[in-house]
Structure formats: structure tokens, C-alpha cells
Image (spheres, chains in turn yellow, red, green, cyan):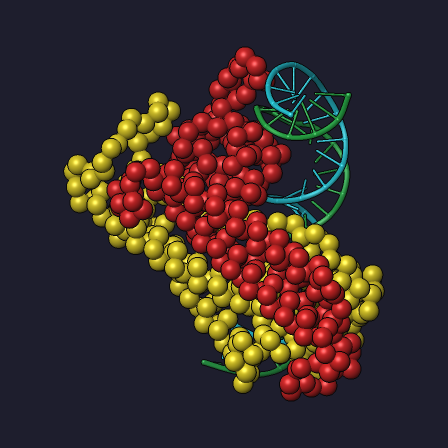
Length: 213
Length: 213
DNA sequence: AGGCCCATGTAATCTGTTACATGATTCC
DNA sequence: GGAATCATGTAACAGATTACATGGGCCT
């Protein structure tokens, strides 16, 4: 039940509409939580019914009317309670890692392409996060901002996002290079250059290694 | 629907029982996918019904009987298909990041403790992953293993896990240090040493900053 | 005697995703 | 003229979590 708290946390920096929240929680930007627009509209409705957020209708000239939400005192208290309670451990769930786990038994070509694609996505996010960080700290240096700036929470989570994507990019590039090398080696030799090979168990077929590109 | 493929990928290295799978997919160990035991038993049942895995019953003397599963040809084909299809992007969902996002509006004490706790957990995982990597590569150096070893998939995903937890630990330690500093500064001064403060918007209460320890 | 490990599940609930729906405005 | 942006949802389905159930053996 952390989506509600993620929403509360996102609204701490000012009023936002469901639509604006949805943009902030999008995969491409979200550095502390991801959610789809439908979830956010639903969660906002629940939060409002429970009095943890309140919305005010804003009519616009050219655009459709929207509702801007802010955190109430009760909402802040709820966030406080959440922050003090134990966190559940975070876990890994990534398609791409599953594919790499199976790398030795699967066509290398498409996999390499996907790993490289992921590296590019990570690179884009790195750029984005760097820009966001620069904007948040303004004129101050990072050390100074983190020491004396007000509101460092979003900065800190963005730093985590940045480091994560850097790690992602580096790993993806290295992984792609390794898989390429191995693929080339197998394709180029009638006798595979693999020392110390053992017998595969009865239920296991030898690994495939086709794929060009 | 990637759990099924994660299971298939996990079974590539040999037969496993539901129970053994469950241990491999546990939060504390899983470096490429997490799932609960119940999910795995259910998924194994589905996979078996669809002919993607097959199990054989193994009776034990002292322990209850178990079923060891392996991937069938159809299962391998399905994994192949999955690996070639586009990956859905991975996203962030972490309680602790939500809390840090709200750090400026929330009691710092418990939060700092949780961030430090997470650093310790990360450190433990780092140790674990290092041991696993050493075991996988055996006598070979890393470069050599990655070039010529058979079965590098699990090694690569474990490398990602290692880097992720190192990033985690580093960020947690830095974050904890920063929050501590700021908390001490506020507690120690009647006048906060924050330059360039602005007026908070009408709907926003000034940030709290109690917490000792 | 109490607790943990092995070993396997069912059932109820909660959370998240996919598909669908609507409608005006601005940009290319 | 077509796509993207703004703006908000509903409904059906898939996936994940929580709670519960069972039972023998091993360790302290």
C-alpha cells in the first residue's frame, strides 16, 4: 500500500492534477515510484474520500478544467506514520535480466540488441536526471545544497535514480560486448574455444548458438 | 507474464524442486527475479500442464518426497520466443525511496535508521554475490571466464545484482550522513543555517524537523 | 518442549495492467 | 488532415501478497 504514500510524497512540492502526477510517475521519469495514470486517478479519489488530500477545481480558458490536489494535515500525518514504519525490502523484477540469465540457451542476436537498447534508454535517463539535479540545486554546489538547501528529499531520490541508470548503462554495455565476443567466437570456429567442457546432464540439450547480425 | 520465463530460466542449470526454486527467488538471494513460494508452486503446476516443464518424483528417506522439475523442449522454445520479444521497461518501486522523497516533511530519526539498515542489508548481499561469483568462475579469472566459460548468463545477472547493491549501499550511507548532518544543524540552532529561504505557498505547512537519537 | 527446515499447497484479497471511452486544442 | 497534449475516468483481467493448512524430522 505504498502507492498512496508515493502520491502524498509527490504532492509535497505543490499542487498537482492527476494528469501532472501521471507524468511524474511515468516510467521514463519516475525516480522513486512508478504508476499508471488510471492508478493515480483511482488513488486520488480514495485519498480524497479519506481526507488525506483535498482538490480544488481550476477552470481554464482553452484547456479542459482540472483538479489540483494538495496534502491535508491528516495526509501529512499518514505520511509521517508510513515513514516511521518498517520498509519492506525492495526486490528485482526485470524482463531483461531474465533473458540474460537464459543467455547461453537462447539466440544471442535479439538479446544483444535489447541489451544495447536498454543502455541507450539508461543514457537518456542519465541526461534527464542530470538536468533535473542541476535545476533543483540552482546556483549552489551539490555539497552546499545538500547541507543547507531546503527540500533535499527529491534531490536524494534523483541521485539514486542517476546512480542506478549509470550502473544500468555500464552493465548493459559490458554485457553486450561480452555476448558479442562469445557469439563471434562460436560462429567463427568449427571447434568451440571453450576449455574444460563437461558432459551435459541427460535432461539438458547442448546450448544453441546461432545468431548473426 | 515473465514469472513463467524466470522459472524456466532458473531451471536451465539443473532440476529443482518448488522448494529449492522458492529459495532461489527469495528477496535475500534473487538477483534476476523475485517471487514467493506460493507463486512458484502455482506457476510450476501451470507450466507442467502446458508441457513447458516436466517433473519427476523423488522419494527421500528422512525428508518428505519432492518433485524435481526440468525444462522440456517446448519450454526451451517458449523461452527462446520470450527472449526474442521486446522487453518491457523496468521501473522503480521502493518504499524507502518514497520515504526519502518525503524526508524534509517527516521525522528524520526513524528514516535515518531505516536507510542505515538498508545499507547493512546491501552490504550482506554484496558479500553473498561476491561469494557466488567466485564459486561460479572457479579457478578462472573473471575476464577469462566471461570469454570462454560455458554458461555466463547467471554470472552476468549476478554482476548486475552486485553493482546494484554496491550502488545501494553507497547511496544509503551518503543519504544517512546528509540527513544526520541536517538534523543536527536544525537541532543545534535557534536560527536555521539555511541561506536564501523563500516563502512557503499558502497550502504548505513549514517542514518539521524534530528527531534525536 | 519449542523452533526451524523440508515440502507442498489452497483461498481470499489486494494491487497492477490492459482495454476502452470521450472530447477539445495545439502543433506539424 | 493526423498526431500529440490536456484531462479524466470505467471495466475486465492478470498478477502478487497475505493468511491459513499440514506434517515429519532435526537441533538445542
